[in-house]
View (spheres, rainbow, N blue to C red):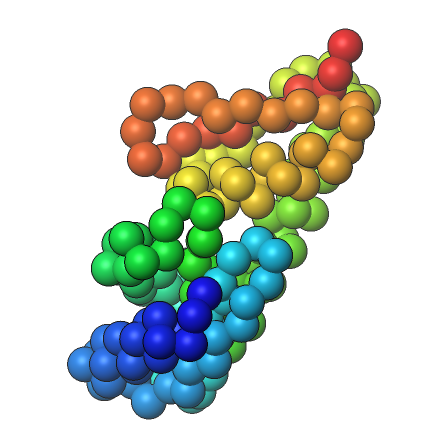
Length: 151
C-alpha cells in the first residue's frame, strides 16, 4: 500500500475515533496477511465493549470506505490495545482443541456462529492440521464452522 493511502486511512480512523469521543493513536503496519491498523490509548474501551462489536464495525467501515483503493488482495485488520490479537489467539486455540476432539471422538465439532473474519482464522488454524478439515455452513453473514477428522 502506498504512503498516500496509508495517510488517508490513518486520518479516516483518527476522525472516526475523534467523532466517538475517543483519543487514540493510530499506527499502520503492513504484514503478509494485509494491512494492520493498531489503535492505542485509554479510550480504547469504547471499541472493545460487548465482545469488540465497535472494533468489528470500525473494521467493516474502513474496509468498505477504501475497498476500491485497496483492491481484493489487501485485507484490513483493525486492533485496539491488543484486543483482536488476543481474541485471534483464543480462536486458533479453540479450533485446534475442536480438531483434537473431532479426531478422538470421531464426531464433527461445531464452532459458531462466526463472522467472516473469525471463520477465516479458524479455517487457517485447521489448515495447519493435516488430520483435520473444516467447512462453513449457513447462508447468512454469521455462519457455523464444522471441524471434522480427515478420513
